[in-house]
Length: 267
Length: 257
Image (cartoon, chains in turn orange, yellow):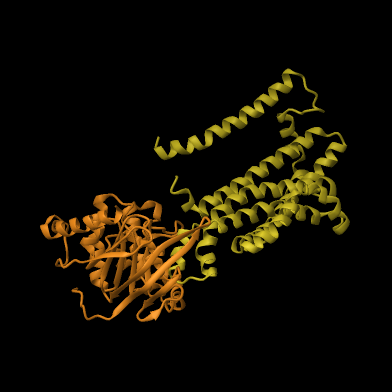
Protein backbone atom coordinates (compact mmCIF):
# COMPACT_ATOMS: atom_id res chain seq x y z
CA UNK A 1 0.00 0.00 0.00
CA UNK A 2 1.35 3.41 -0.88
CA UNK A 3 0.98 6.17 1.59
CA UNK A 4 -1.52 8.69 0.43
CA UNK A 5 -0.34 12.16 1.43
CA UNK A 6 -3.91 13.34 1.14
CA UNK A 7 -5.12 11.07 3.95
CA UNK A 8 -6.55 12.92 6.93
CA UNK A 9 -4.44 13.52 10.01
CA UNK A 10 -4.85 10.68 12.50
CA UNK A 11 -2.56 11.46 15.42
CA UNK A 12 -1.55 14.98 16.30
CA UNK A 13 0.62 16.41 19.07
CA UNK A 14 0.43 20.19 19.52
CA UNK A 15 3.12 21.80 21.65
CA UNK A 16 3.18 18.89 24.05
CA UNK A 17 5.37 19.07 27.14
CA UNK A 18 5.50 16.63 29.99
CA UNK A 19 6.94 16.97 33.46
CA UNK A 20 6.67 14.42 36.18
CA UNK A 21 8.08 13.90 39.63
CA UNK A 22 10.19 10.83 40.16
CA UNK A 23 11.87 10.09 43.49
CA UNK A 24 11.24 13.66 44.56
CA UNK A 25 12.97 15.08 41.50
CA UNK A 26 11.21 17.00 38.80
CA UNK A 27 11.82 15.31 35.44
CA UNK A 28 11.34 17.30 32.27
CA UNK A 29 10.61 14.48 29.83
CA UNK A 30 9.23 16.21 26.73
CA UNK A 31 9.42 19.77 25.56
CA UNK A 32 7.19 21.36 22.98
CA UNK A 33 6.70 18.37 20.72
CA UNK A 34 4.57 19.02 17.68
CA UNK A 35 3.89 16.43 15.02
CA UNK A 36 1.11 15.23 12.79
CA UNK A 37 0.76 11.68 11.54
CA UNK A 38 -1.54 10.86 8.66
CA UNK A 39 -3.89 7.92 8.55
CA UNK A 40 -2.14 4.76 7.42
CA UNK A 41 1.31 6.28 7.82
CA UNK A 42 4.18 4.31 9.37
CA UNK A 43 6.25 6.60 11.54
CA UNK A 44 9.38 5.77 13.52
CA UNK A 45 10.77 7.79 16.39
CA UNK A 46 14.46 7.31 17.15
CA UNK A 47 16.67 8.93 19.75
CA UNK A 48 19.13 8.35 22.55
CA UNK A 49 17.90 6.23 25.45
CA UNK A 50 15.91 8.08 28.08
CA UNK A 51 14.87 10.80 25.65
CA UNK A 52 11.14 10.35 26.17
CA UNK A 53 10.34 8.21 23.11
CA UNK A 54 8.18 5.86 25.14
CA UNK A 55 6.49 8.84 26.77
CA UNK A 56 5.11 9.90 23.40
CA UNK A 57 3.48 6.50 22.98
CA UNK A 58 2.00 6.66 26.45
CA UNK A 59 0.56 10.08 25.68
CA UNK A 60 -1.04 8.85 22.46
CA UNK A 61 -2.37 5.75 24.25
CA UNK A 62 -3.91 7.99 26.88
CA UNK A 63 -1.91 6.36 29.68
CA UNK A 64 -0.43 9.75 30.60
CA UNK A 65 -1.88 13.25 30.33
CA UNK A 66 0.39 15.98 28.91
CA UNK A 67 1.49 18.77 31.24
CA UNK A 68 1.12 21.27 28.43
CA UNK A 69 -0.28 21.13 24.92
CA UNK A 70 -2.74 18.76 23.32
CA UNK A 71 -2.79 15.21 22.04
CA UNK A 72 -5.47 14.58 19.42
CA UNK A 73 -6.69 11.44 17.71
CA UNK A 74 -8.89 12.03 14.68
CA UNK A 75 -9.19 15.63 15.81
CA UNK A 76 -10.54 14.80 19.27
CA UNK A 77 -8.44 15.39 22.41
CA UNK A 78 -7.21 12.22 24.11
CA UNK A 79 -8.72 11.81 27.54
CA UNK A 80 -7.76 8.46 28.98
CA UNK A 81 -7.13 5.11 27.28
CA UNK A 82 -8.34 4.68 23.72
CA UNK A 83 -10.24 1.70 22.41
CA UNK A 84 -8.95 2.05 18.86
CA UNK A 85 -5.32 1.77 19.89
CA UNK A 86 -3.22 -1.40 20.02
CA UNK A 87 0.07 -1.50 21.84
CA UNK A 88 3.06 -3.85 21.92
CA UNK A 89 5.97 -3.50 24.27
CA UNK A 90 9.65 -4.38 24.44
CA UNK A 91 8.76 -7.48 26.43
CA UNK A 92 5.91 -9.58 25.08
CA UNK A 93 4.16 -9.50 28.50
CA UNK A 94 1.89 -12.43 27.70
CA UNK A 95 -0.32 -13.78 30.44
CA UNK A 96 1.45 -17.02 31.37
CA UNK A 97 -1.74 -18.87 32.33
CA UNK A 98 -3.25 -18.38 28.90
CA UNK A 99 -2.40 -20.15 25.66
CA UNK A 100 -1.11 -18.16 22.69
CA UNK A 101 -4.62 -18.07 21.24
CA UNK A 102 -6.20 -16.94 24.52
CA UNK A 103 -3.57 -14.23 24.83
CA UNK A 104 -4.43 -12.91 21.39
CA UNK A 105 -8.12 -12.89 22.31
CA UNK A 106 -7.58 -10.77 25.44
CA UNK A 107 -8.35 -7.34 23.91
CA UNK A 108 -11.67 -8.64 22.60
CA UNK A 109 -12.67 -9.41 26.18
CA UNK A 110 -11.97 -5.81 27.17
CA UNK A 111 -12.69 -3.50 24.26
CA UNK A 112 -16.21 -2.53 23.22
CA UNK A 113 -18.17 -3.57 21.23
CA UNK A 114 -16.43 -6.97 21.11
CA UNK A 115 -16.58 -7.30 24.86
CA UNK A 116 -20.34 -7.59 24.86
CA UNK A 117 -20.42 -10.11 22.03
CA UNK A 118 -17.43 -12.12 23.14
CA UNK A 119 -19.25 -15.10 24.64
CA UNK A 120 -21.70 -15.27 21.74
CA UNK A 121 -19.17 -14.84 18.94
CA UNK A 122 -16.28 -16.68 20.50
CA UNK A 123 -15.87 -19.04 17.55
CA UNK A 124 -15.75 -16.20 15.05
CA UNK A 125 -13.20 -14.35 17.16
CA UNK A 126 -11.11 -17.46 17.54
CA UNK A 127 -11.02 -17.87 13.78
CA UNK A 128 -9.84 -14.28 13.41
CA UNK A 129 -7.15 -14.87 16.01
CA UNK A 130 -6.04 -18.11 14.35
CA UNK A 131 -5.86 -16.33 11.01
CA UNK A 132 -3.71 -13.61 12.54
CA UNK A 133 -1.41 -16.19 14.17
CA UNK A 134 -1.15 -17.85 10.76
CA UNK A 135 -0.15 -14.52 9.19
CA UNK A 136 2.78 -14.14 11.58
CA UNK A 137 3.88 -17.72 11.00
CA UNK A 138 2.53 -19.31 14.16
CA UNK A 139 0.06 -21.84 12.78
CA UNK A 140 0.07 -24.89 15.02
CA UNK A 141 1.19 -22.93 18.06
CA UNK A 142 -2.21 -21.54 19.09
CA UNK A 143 -2.60 -23.93 22.01
CA UNK A 144 0.93 -23.58 23.34
CA UNK A 145 1.58 -21.81 26.61
CA UNK A 146 3.91 -18.79 26.48
CA UNK A 147 6.72 -20.66 28.22
CA UNK A 148 6.69 -23.18 25.39
CA UNK A 149 7.41 -20.44 22.82
CA UNK A 150 10.72 -18.78 21.96
CA UNK A 151 11.21 -15.06 22.54
CA UNK A 152 10.56 -14.28 18.88
CA UNK A 153 7.39 -16.36 18.86
CA UNK A 154 6.16 -14.63 22.01
CA UNK A 155 6.74 -11.27 20.39
CA UNK A 156 4.71 -12.43 17.37
CA UNK A 157 1.86 -13.37 19.68
CA UNK A 158 2.19 -9.95 21.30
CA UNK A 159 1.87 -8.29 17.87
CA UNK A 160 -1.26 -10.34 17.15
CA UNK A 161 -2.72 -9.28 20.49
CA UNK A 162 -2.08 -5.64 19.62
CA UNK A 163 -3.91 -6.06 16.30
CA UNK A 164 -6.80 -8.44 17.02
CA UNK A 165 -9.34 -5.72 17.79
CA UNK A 166 -8.42 -4.02 14.50
CA UNK A 167 -7.15 -0.80 16.06
CA UNK A 168 -6.81 2.26 13.94
CA UNK A 169 -3.46 3.05 15.57
CA UNK A 170 -0.67 0.61 16.45
CA UNK A 171 1.88 1.77 19.02
CA UNK A 172 5.12 -0.20 19.18
CA UNK A 173 7.59 0.39 22.00
CA UNK A 174 10.91 -1.13 20.90
CA UNK A 175 9.09 -4.39 20.21
CA UNK A 176 12.12 -6.21 18.79
CA UNK A 177 14.86 -4.80 21.02
CA UNK A 178 15.13 -7.90 23.18
CA UNK A 179 15.46 -10.32 20.24
CA UNK A 180 18.54 -11.63 18.46
CA UNK A 181 19.46 -9.94 15.17
CA UNK A 182 18.15 -12.68 12.86
CA UNK A 183 14.80 -12.98 14.57
CA UNK A 184 14.49 -9.21 14.73
CA UNK A 185 15.06 -8.73 11.00
CA UNK A 186 12.68 -11.57 10.20
CA UNK A 187 9.99 -9.83 12.26
CA UNK A 188 10.54 -6.57 10.36
CA UNK A 189 9.17 -8.41 7.34
CA UNK A 190 6.26 -9.81 9.36
CA UNK A 191 5.38 -6.37 10.67
CA UNK A 192 5.63 -4.80 7.22
CA UNK A 193 3.19 -7.39 5.85
CA UNK A 194 0.78 -6.86 8.73
CA UNK A 195 0.85 -3.12 8.21
CA UNK A 196 0.32 -3.44 4.46
CA UNK A 197 -2.63 -5.79 5.06
CA UNK A 198 -4.26 -3.66 7.71
CA UNK A 199 -3.45 -0.15 6.64
CA UNK A 200 -3.41 1.09 10.21
CA UNK A 201 -1.36 4.01 11.46
CA UNK A 202 1.83 2.86 13.18
CA UNK A 203 4.13 4.70 15.56
CA UNK A 204 7.29 2.71 16.18
CA UNK A 205 9.72 3.73 18.88
CA UNK A 206 13.17 2.24 18.43
CA UNK A 207 16.86 2.91 18.85
CA UNK A 208 17.71 0.73 15.88
CA UNK A 209 18.20 3.06 12.90
CA UNK A 210 18.12 0.26 10.32
CA UNK A 211 14.85 -0.91 11.78
CA UNK A 212 13.42 2.60 11.53
CA UNK A 213 14.47 3.03 7.90
CA UNK A 214 13.35 -0.47 6.92
CA UNK A 215 9.84 -0.04 8.28
CA UNK A 216 8.89 3.61 8.37
CA UNK A 217 7.75 6.13 5.79
CA UNK A 218 8.96 8.92 8.03
CA UNK A 219 11.59 8.94 10.78
CA UNK A 220 11.72 11.52 13.56
CA UNK A 221 14.89 12.06 15.56
CA UNK A 222 14.55 13.16 19.16
CA UNK A 223 17.06 15.06 21.26
CA UNK A 224 18.17 13.85 24.65
CA UNK A 225 16.05 14.87 27.62
CA UNK A 226 14.03 17.01 27.64
CA UNK A 227 12.95 15.34 24.40
CA UNK A 228 12.34 17.53 21.37
CA UNK A 229 11.93 16.57 17.73
CA UNK A 230 15.09 17.78 16.03
CA UNK A 231 15.02 16.06 12.65
CA UNK A 232 12.52 14.58 10.27
CA UNK A 233 13.47 12.32 7.39
CA UNK A 234 11.17 10.83 4.77
CA UNK A 235 11.94 7.30 3.59
CA UNK A 236 10.86 7.07 -0.02
CA UNK A 237 12.14 3.57 -0.68
CA UNK A 238 9.71 1.32 -2.57
CA UNK A 239 7.73 -1.36 -0.75
CA UNK A 240 7.70 -4.11 0.14
CA UNK A 241 11.26 -3.66 1.34
CA UNK A 242 13.44 -6.71 1.70
CA UNK A 243 16.53 -7.39 3.78
CA UNK A 244 18.45 -7.34 0.49
CA UNK A 245 17.45 -3.67 0.15
CA UNK A 246 19.20 -2.82 3.41
CA UNK A 247 22.56 -3.21 1.67
CA UNK A 248 21.73 -0.82 -1.17
CA UNK A 249 23.25 2.70 -1.20
CA UNK A 250 19.94 4.55 -0.82
CA UNK A 251 19.18 2.63 2.36
CA UNK A 252 22.69 2.81 3.74
CA UNK A 253 22.92 6.55 3.08
CA UNK A 254 19.71 7.25 4.94
CA UNK A 255 20.84 5.21 7.93
CA UNK A 256 24.15 7.03 7.85
CA UNK A 257 22.39 10.38 7.74
CA UNK A 258 20.30 9.48 10.80
CA UNK A 259 23.39 8.16 12.53
CA UNK A 260 25.05 11.55 12.08
CA UNK A 261 21.95 13.31 13.44
CA UNK A 262 21.91 11.15 16.54
CA UNK A 263 25.61 11.74 17.02
CA UNK A 264 25.01 15.50 17.04
CA UNK A 265 22.09 15.12 19.44
CA UNK A 266 24.04 13.03 21.90
CA UNK A 267 27.11 15.28 21.89
CA UNK B 1 13.64 -48.91 31.80
CA UNK B 2 12.20 -45.77 30.24
CA UNK B 3 13.30 -42.34 31.38
CA UNK B 4 9.84 -41.58 32.63
CA UNK B 5 9.76 -44.66 34.84
CA UNK B 6 13.21 -43.89 36.18
CA UNK B 7 12.04 -40.40 37.08
CA UNK B 8 8.96 -41.83 38.80
CA UNK B 9 11.10 -44.19 40.84
CA UNK B 10 13.42 -41.34 41.80
CA UNK B 11 10.37 -39.50 43.09
CA UNK B 12 9.13 -42.44 45.14
CA UNK B 13 12.21 -44.24 46.43
CA UNK B 14 13.96 -41.56 48.57
CA UNK B 15 10.94 -40.65 50.73
CA UNK B 16 10.03 -44.32 51.15
CA UNK B 17 13.55 -45.13 52.30
CA UNK B 18 13.51 -42.21 54.75
CA UNK B 19 10.23 -43.30 56.28
CA UNK B 20 11.30 -46.94 56.60
CA UNK B 21 14.60 -45.86 58.18
CA UNK B 22 12.76 -43.62 60.62
CA UNK B 23 10.56 -46.43 61.86
CA UNK B 24 13.45 -48.88 61.87
CA UNK B 25 15.60 -46.64 64.10
CA UNK B 26 12.63 -46.07 66.38
CA UNK B 27 11.91 -49.80 66.62
CA UNK B 28 15.51 -50.88 67.11
CA UNK B 29 16.23 -47.99 69.49
CA UNK B 30 13.37 -49.03 71.76
CA UNK B 31 14.54 -52.65 71.74
CA UNK B 32 18.22 -51.88 72.33
CA UNK B 33 17.67 -49.39 75.13
CA UNK B 34 14.77 -51.36 76.57
CA UNK B 35 12.39 -48.41 76.54
CA UNK B 36 9.20 -49.12 78.44
CA UNK B 37 6.09 -49.48 76.31
CA UNK B 38 4.43 -47.07 78.69
CA UNK B 39 6.93 -44.32 77.79
CA UNK B 40 7.46 -44.90 74.09
CA UNK B 41 5.88 -47.91 72.43
CA UNK B 42 7.63 -49.43 69.46
CA UNK B 43 6.03 -48.61 66.08
CA UNK B 44 5.25 -52.28 65.56
CA UNK B 45 3.25 -52.22 68.79
CA UNK B 46 1.47 -49.01 67.73
CA UNK B 47 0.60 -50.58 64.38
CA UNK B 48 -0.61 -53.75 66.06
CA UNK B 49 -2.71 -51.66 68.42
CA UNK B 50 -4.07 -49.80 65.44
CA UNK B 51 -5.33 -53.01 63.86
CA UNK B 52 -6.79 -54.15 67.17
CA UNK B 53 -8.64 -50.87 67.68
CA UNK B 54 -9.39 -50.13 64.04
CA UNK B 55 -13.13 -50.15 64.44
CA UNK B 56 -12.84 -47.60 67.27
CA UNK B 57 -10.23 -45.44 65.55
CA UNK B 58 -11.90 -44.95 62.19
CA UNK B 59 -15.19 -43.32 63.23
CA UNK B 60 -13.10 -40.87 65.28
CA UNK B 61 -10.67 -40.28 62.42
CA UNK B 62 -13.56 -39.61 60.06
CA UNK B 63 -15.07 -37.17 62.54
CA UNK B 64 -11.76 -35.30 62.63
CA UNK B 65 -11.57 -35.35 58.85
CA UNK B 66 -15.09 -33.98 58.72
CA UNK B 67 -14.43 -31.06 61.08
CA UNK B 68 -11.13 -30.37 59.30
CA UNK B 69 -12.69 -30.21 55.87
CA UNK B 70 -15.69 -28.13 56.92
CA UNK B 71 -13.44 -25.65 58.73
CA UNK B 72 -11.01 -25.67 55.82
CA UNK B 73 -13.81 -25.11 53.32
CA UNK B 74 -14.93 -22.07 55.31
CA UNK B 75 -11.33 -20.87 55.43
CA UNK B 76 -11.07 -21.11 51.64
CA UNK B 77 -14.27 -19.12 51.06
CA UNK B 78 -13.45 -16.42 53.61
CA UNK B 79 -9.71 -16.41 52.88
CA UNK B 80 -10.18 -15.92 49.14
CA UNK B 81 -12.83 -13.25 49.71
CA UNK B 82 -10.73 -11.30 52.17
CA UNK B 83 -7.52 -11.87 50.22
CA UNK B 84 -9.23 -10.52 47.09
CA UNK B 85 -10.39 -7.46 49.03
CA UNK B 86 -7.01 -6.58 50.51
CA UNK B 87 -5.28 -7.34 47.21
CA UNK B 88 -7.75 -5.21 45.27
CA UNK B 89 -7.74 -2.13 47.46
CA UNK B 90 -4.70 -0.68 49.14
CA UNK B 91 -6.96 1.21 51.51
CA UNK B 92 -8.63 -1.97 52.71
CA UNK B 93 -5.23 -3.59 53.00
CA UNK B 94 -3.99 -0.81 55.26
CA UNK B 95 -7.21 -0.81 57.24
CA UNK B 96 -7.51 -4.54 57.80
CA UNK B 97 -3.97 -5.84 57.97
CA UNK B 98 -3.10 -4.91 61.58
CA UNK B 99 -6.34 -6.44 62.78
CA UNK B 100 -5.63 -9.62 60.82
CA UNK B 101 -2.14 -9.85 62.28
CA UNK B 102 -3.64 -9.38 65.72
CA UNK B 103 -6.09 -12.22 65.23
CA UNK B 104 -3.42 -14.44 63.79
CA UNK B 105 -1.13 -13.81 66.75
CA UNK B 106 -3.62 -15.35 69.17
CA UNK B 107 -2.68 -18.98 69.80
CA UNK B 108 -5.70 -20.85 68.51
CA UNK B 109 -5.57 -23.32 71.41
CA UNK B 110 -6.35 -20.37 73.70
CA UNK B 111 -9.65 -19.89 71.91
CA UNK B 112 -10.90 -23.42 72.58
CA UNK B 113 -12.31 -22.59 76.05
CA UNK B 114 -14.06 -19.53 74.62
CA UNK B 115 -15.74 -21.59 71.92
CA UNK B 116 -16.77 -24.16 74.50
CA UNK B 117 -18.53 -21.41 76.44
CA UNK B 118 -20.25 -20.18 73.27
CA UNK B 119 -21.10 -23.45 71.53
CA UNK B 120 -20.56 -26.18 74.09
CA UNK B 121 -18.40 -29.22 73.74
CA UNK B 122 -18.62 -30.97 70.36
CA UNK B 123 -18.15 -30.47 66.65
CA UNK B 124 -18.44 -26.69 66.52
CA UNK B 125 -15.23 -25.68 68.34
CA UNK B 126 -13.19 -28.07 66.17
CA UNK B 127 -14.64 -26.62 62.97
CA UNK B 128 -14.04 -23.05 64.13
CA UNK B 129 -10.45 -23.68 65.16
CA UNK B 130 -9.76 -25.47 61.87
CA UNK B 131 -11.25 -22.47 60.08
CA UNK B 132 -9.38 -19.77 62.03
CA UNK B 133 -6.00 -21.42 61.79
CA UNK B 134 -6.16 -21.90 58.00
CA UNK B 135 -7.86 -18.66 57.10
CA UNK B 136 -4.90 -16.34 57.54
CA UNK B 137 -2.32 -17.96 55.24
CA UNK B 138 -4.92 -18.26 52.48
CA UNK B 139 -5.99 -14.61 52.74
CA UNK B 140 -2.42 -13.30 52.87
CA UNK B 141 -1.31 -15.41 49.90
CA UNK B 142 -4.26 -14.47 47.70
CA UNK B 143 -3.84 -10.82 48.67
CA UNK B 144 -0.13 -10.86 47.87
CA UNK B 145 -0.70 -12.54 44.51
CA UNK B 146 -3.20 -9.90 43.49
CA UNK B 147 -1.33 -6.91 44.88
CA UNK B 148 2.00 -7.74 43.22
CA UNK B 149 0.86 -7.68 39.58
CA UNK B 150 3.68 -6.24 37.47
CA UNK B 151 3.02 -2.66 36.28
CA UNK B 152 3.87 -3.74 32.72
CA UNK B 153 1.03 -6.24 32.85
CA UNK B 154 -1.30 -3.55 34.12
CA UNK B 155 -0.26 -1.34 31.19
CA UNK B 156 -1.41 -4.03 28.76
CA UNK B 157 -4.95 -3.80 30.09
CA UNK B 158 -4.84 -0.08 30.77
CA UNK B 159 -3.86 0.65 27.18
CA UNK B 160 -7.01 -1.21 26.14
CA UNK B 161 -9.14 0.90 28.44
CA UNK B 162 -9.72 -1.93 30.93
CA UNK B 163 -11.25 -0.99 34.27
CA UNK B 164 -9.80 -1.75 37.68
CA UNK B 165 -12.21 -4.64 37.92
CA UNK B 166 -11.08 -5.98 34.52
CA UNK B 167 -7.55 -5.82 35.87
CA UNK B 168 -8.60 -7.87 38.86
CA UNK B 169 -10.61 -10.41 36.89
CA UNK B 170 -8.27 -10.93 33.94
CA UNK B 171 -4.89 -10.51 35.62
CA UNK B 172 -4.89 -10.16 39.40
CA UNK B 173 -7.04 -13.15 40.25
CA UNK B 174 -5.59 -15.70 37.82
CA UNK B 175 -2.12 -14.51 38.75
CA UNK B 176 -2.88 -15.16 42.42
CA UNK B 177 -3.85 -18.78 41.78
CA UNK B 178 -0.36 -20.27 42.28
CA UNK B 179 -0.14 -18.38 45.58
CA UNK B 180 -3.59 -19.66 46.50
CA UNK B 181 -2.84 -23.30 45.76
CA UNK B 182 0.54 -23.10 47.48
CA UNK B 183 -1.21 -21.80 50.59
CA UNK B 184 -3.83 -24.59 50.45
CA UNK B 185 -1.24 -27.31 50.99
CA UNK B 186 0.02 -25.60 54.11
CA UNK B 187 -3.38 -24.48 55.30
CA UNK B 188 -5.01 -27.90 55.09
CA UNK B 189 -2.43 -29.44 57.41
CA UNK B 190 -2.86 -26.47 59.76
CA UNK B 191 -6.62 -27.04 59.71
CA UNK B 192 -6.07 -30.62 60.61
CA UNK B 193 -3.83 -29.65 63.54
CA UNK B 194 -6.46 -27.13 64.64
CA UNK B 195 -9.19 -29.75 64.64
CA UNK B 196 -7.16 -32.19 66.70
CA UNK B 197 -6.20 -29.47 69.18
CA UNK B 198 -9.85 -28.54 69.67
CA UNK B 199 -10.84 -32.18 70.13
CA UNK B 200 -8.19 -32.67 72.80
CA UNK B 201 -10.09 -30.44 75.17
CA UNK B 202 -13.51 -29.75 73.81
CA UNK B 203 -15.06 -32.71 72.11
CA UNK B 204 -16.56 -36.05 72.83
CA UNK B 205 -15.60 -37.40 69.44
CA UNK B 206 -12.69 -37.30 67.05
CA UNK B 207 -9.17 -38.64 67.04
CA UNK B 208 -7.96 -35.96 69.45
CA UNK B 209 -10.62 -36.93 71.94
CA UNK B 210 -9.75 -40.59 71.49
CA UNK B 211 -6.11 -39.88 72.32
CA UNK B 212 -7.05 -37.98 75.45
CA UNK B 213 -9.19 -40.87 76.67
CA UNK B 214 -6.49 -43.39 75.78
CA UNK B 215 -3.83 -41.47 77.66
CA UNK B 216 -6.07 -41.06 80.71
CA UNK B 217 -6.31 -44.85 80.74
CA UNK B 218 -2.53 -45.10 80.25
CA UNK B 219 -3.07 -46.90 76.94
CA UNK B 220 0.02 -45.31 75.45
CA UNK B 221 0.20 -47.62 72.39
CA UNK B 222 -3.30 -46.48 71.43
CA UNK B 223 -2.21 -42.84 71.78
CA UNK B 224 0.63 -43.56 69.38
CA UNK B 225 -1.67 -45.44 67.03
CA UNK B 226 -3.79 -42.27 67.01
CA UNK B 227 -0.72 -40.12 66.32
CA UNK B 228 0.24 -42.34 63.38
CA UNK B 229 -3.25 -42.03 61.93
CA UNK B 230 -3.12 -38.25 62.37
CA UNK B 231 0.24 -38.08 60.61
CA UNK B 232 -0.91 -40.34 57.78
CA UNK B 233 -4.06 -38.26 57.24
CA UNK B 234 -2.01 -35.06 57.28
CA UNK B 235 0.32 -36.41 54.61
CA UNK B 236 -2.65 -37.62 52.55
CA UNK B 237 -4.34 -34.21 52.69
CA UNK B 238 -1.13 -32.42 51.82
CA UNK B 239 -0.53 -34.78 48.90
CA UNK B 240 -4.09 -34.32 47.64
CA UNK B 241 -3.72 -30.56 47.54
CA UNK B 242 -0.21 -30.69 46.12
CA UNK B 243 -1.62 -32.80 43.28
CA UNK B 244 -4.49 -30.36 42.81
CA UNK B 245 -1.98 -27.50 42.67
CA UNK B 246 0.00 -29.24 39.91
CA UNK B 247 -3.19 -29.78 37.97
CA UNK B 248 -4.62 -26.30 38.35
CA UNK B 249 -1.62 -24.03 37.93
CA UNK B 250 0.65 -26.03 35.68
CA UNK B 251 1.73 -22.81 33.97
CA UNK B 252 3.42 -21.60 37.14
CA UNK B 253 5.78 -24.56 36.99
CA UNK B 254 6.87 -23.71 33.45
CA UNK B 255 6.52 -27.24 32.22
CA UNK B 256 8.68 -28.95 34.81
CA UNK B 257 7.63 -32.59 34.39
